[in-house]
Length: 488
Image 1 (tube, rainbow, N blue to C red):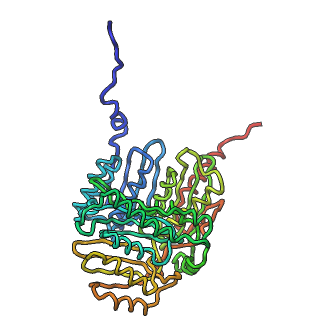
Image 2: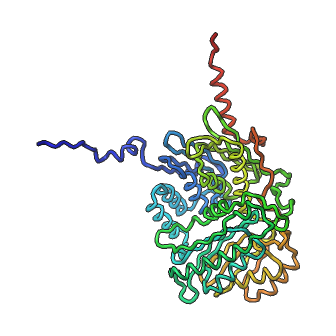
C-alpha cells in the first residue's frame, strides 16, 4: 500500500519575506533635512507595533517633530522627524546602531530582550532592577500618601531601589523596585510578599471616604508584587504607569473640592491662553474614526497618546503628527480591534477623556525638588516624612539609585493643591542636613494639564501651516464622488 503525504515547501514560512523583503527595514537619514534626522520604518504590521517603535525612540529621549504613519494591507510604513535631547541631529554612531538594532528586532520577544541588553551596553545602563522585586500600586490618592507608602515599606524592612509615582485627578499609580533590607536581594518568600501586599492594600483603602462619589469608590485599590527575572524589559515603566492610571479611572474628574486643583492650574500653559482640544469624527466612507488632538507640544507626547489608544484596544491605521510654534497637532485614523469605528457618543466621550488624562498626567505644575544624597536604608521615608510634616504633598516622584547615591526628583504642592510657598521650601532645606545636593525649580509655567476637551463633529481649528491628513482624505473622497454621473 502506498501512502501519499502532501508536500510542504520548507521555505513556505519565509514566503512573505521573499515577496516583500525582510520583516523590518529601518533607514536613518541625516542628509534629507537640515535640522533633524529622518527615520523610516517599513515592517510587517501587527497590533501595537507603532507603540513599540515610538517607545524605542522615546527611551533614548528623542523628540519627535513630525511623523506620518500608514499601516493598511498588512504592512506598516512610518516616517519620523526627530532630534536628540540637545536639539541636534543624531550623530552618535552608537545611538544609530541601537535604533537599528532595537526597531529591527522589536517584533520578537527574544530579540527585544537582546536589543535592550545592547542598549544597556551602549548607554552604560546596567539593568540592576532585574535583580529586585517589583511592586505596583494604584488607588485613590490623598495628601501624604506617597510618604506613607515609603514609610510602610521601610517598616516592612524593604529597601526601595527605584520608584516612580504619578498622581492625577485624585488617583495614584506607583511602580517601585524593592529588595530585602539586610541582604539587598529579591524578596521571593510568598508569605512575606503577601504581608507586603496586604499592608499596602490596607493603606490604600484607607483613602476611601463616604464623601466620594460612586465612580470614585469603585476605583480599585490594588497592590501586586512580582520578582523580575532575566529578560524582563525594564523600560516599560512609563507605559505601566499609564495602564495603572487608566485602570484606576483617573479620566474621571474628582467631585470633592478638597482634592481638586484650582481651575488656574488646569490651563494649557500656552502664553496665548489656548487650551487643549480633542475631537472625534467618523469617516463613514472609509469606516475610520478620526481622532484630532491640538495641545501644547512637549517631549513624549506622541508616546502618551499612542500608548493610551493601544491600551484601549484601538488600532491605528494612519496618523499625522506635526508641531509648530510650541503647539502640536495629532491626527489618528483608528478602529476598534473588532474592526469597527467608534459607534456611540458615549464611546467617543470616554476616548476623549482618556486622551486628555494621558496628556495631563505626565507633567505637573508646581515646585520641582531635586535631591541627591548618599544612599542609606530608610532615606526615602525620611525625606518624604519631612515634606509631609511641612504640609507638602508629592504629586509626582522619580526615585533612582546610582551607585552609592540616591537621586530623587519630586513635584510638590501643598495639601490643598496650591503652589508651594518659598519659605516652606527653605524650611525643608534646613531640615535635610544629610542631603548633598538640593535644587529647587519652579515649573509653574510648564504644565501640560489642560481642561476643555470637546466632543465635536469637526476637528479643532488648524493653526496656519499645519498639515491635516483628515482634510486630504475628505477632499479625495469628495473629488472621487464628483466623478459619478447621475442617471435617470
